[in-house]
Image (cartoon, rainbow, N blue to C red):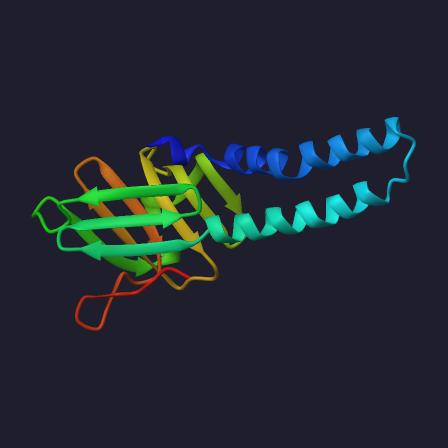
Length: 167
């Protein structure tokens, strides 16, 4: 895991830097100078809009396969799997309800919301894996390579091994 896989803490830090600190500072300035609170209210609206724009820009999702390398990115979370074409590697496409021991159970460093499971999870078999399940899914791709496992929503390969981008 790298620095950018810290989890929701980076979103909280971004919120504090973009919204909380500026709005509280402007509110304190208005309070001590006996000015109306209108600038503080407008700064709340503006900084919230900036925060929403930044989080939307940061949370781009992508799944890319280049030669022998799989790169997964969802917001601040990312994983890289090398040597996916080796005999020891396996990519299985299966229905979501048949994951069995590869079902994500505990979010170790991730976000778990209805229809949005992204980050590092402990699976039912107690192994750590990168999970990227976004939206309503019928099937998932299970990628195993050495000691790295990834559970990605959708079919990574459709029609002759072409890449299906993440939603």
